[in-house]
Image (cartoon, rainbow, N blue to C red):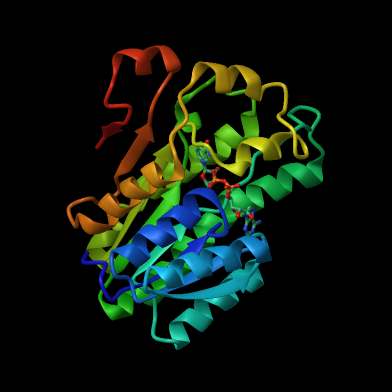
Length: 259
Ligand SMILES: NC(=O)c1ccc[n+]([C@@H]2O[C@H](COP(=O)([O-])OP(=O)(O)OC[C@H]3O[C@@H](n4cnc5c(N)ncnc54)[C@H](O)[C@@H]3O)[C@@H](O)[C@H]2O)c1
């Protein structure tokens, strides 16, 4: 897909990977970006960055776990001309209250954000993109989907669900013209790492940070842009990771991308 002139919607666009992707899309000439986040200040900051790169940023403050509100933003975007690109990216860690101590309410909240909102966002995107001839959906997974030892068990499982769901949607391209892909970041230097402990690092994050090289959000955004631009990528799971610190010491390219 040629990004110039296109319209995108990004959830979790108020920070980190979502913001970096919004800016990258604007720099590629996207006309309009729907910036969806529950964080008002972060979303407005992203909108300013997007505007500085020449695109229109429309901020909608929405908790993606609120299915009616999320549906409402997609419907508004459809009425305003439609969407070409949807990046279902908002995600949360379980945090300090790790499984099996996690309350049922917290378990359901994590699943609502990390799985239900991604599936609903994909469904809404396809239903409005298909009549217009197609589009691209990217869902944010994680390399934790492949680990059996990630300490945040439920988070890892939700990301495995996102990866499996996105890969399973590949055949929909034939009937709808919509490419559904997943990006799987490794460790990335964003505020989500602090969110594991109410503003402080949770204990289990220390060895993760010590043993892995963190990429920048812009590194992941480059992977997302590559997925959007290459029409041959259908149902792809793109890993963008610097890997373990020991491996990075030998691998000067820092980024290993598996197609
Ligand atoms: N940072 C990493 O190491 C890493 C690694 C793999 C995957 N990821 C995934 O990347 C995605 C983006 O995370 P990030 O690292 O940029 O973190 P981040 O904290 O910088 O950004 C996440 C954004 O999502 C928003 N958000 C969270 N829950 C929301 C909700 N219910 N409704 C609306 N907005 C919500 C937050 O307000 C924030 O602006 C997440 O899905 C995360 O799981 C991150």
